[in-house]
Amino acid sequence: MTKLILVRHALTTDNQDNKLSGHIDSVVSEIGKKQIDKLTTYLEKVDIDKIYTTTSSRTKDTVQKIANLKKINIIQKEALKEISFGDFEGITFEKIKKNHPKEFQDMIDKGYEYKYPNGESLIDSYNRVANEISEIIIDNKDKTILICSHGGTIRNIITYLISNSYEYHWNFKIDNASVTILEVENGFTVVNTMNNTSFI
Image 1: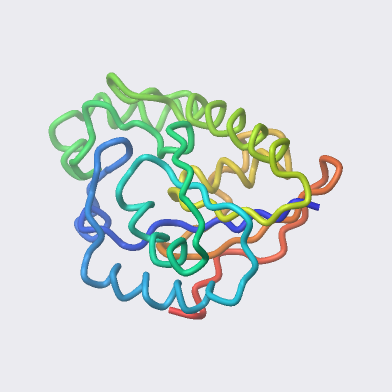
Image 2: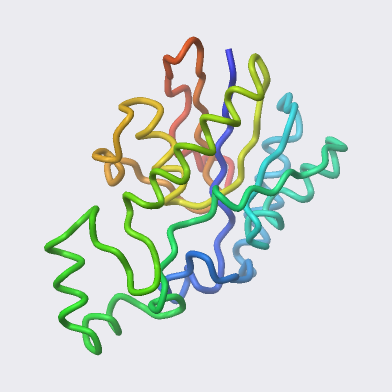
């Protein structure tokens, strides 16, 4: 059995301001720094074989302390990044609705297939993440893997592993600094823990 410990990065300043931050970098907020300390304490006694993050600083910063404690080198994976919001990176949905009403309506009408200008669609990000998590599972049979990534990425991982589809993406709530644990064996996935933030 391969165990996946999925951690969403700690709260960032963009999260607090409701700004879209997919591929752009955003810094962990003061609240987020406190979340990291509590998360580190929570994970300190958990057996972990490998740690993966994205190339975004917010994911690396979230688990750097636990990586240091465990003496594990972080492996960065570009393909585990959040969806790319393209031209809308760094702005809010409210501004999109006000300044780009047609694009905003397209988001609603096209749903999963809507592609952000010069960015990705949810289906694009799902396929990217699904391919990467498949390889990670193959490479880590019978190991416990911690993956620190993003809310959308974690939803993509869950819906892929339990349904082989993106259609349940929005059925999962993934809070900042939350822990979700999946157990994968012979292609069958069990959700052990979902969006746990009780330690924060």
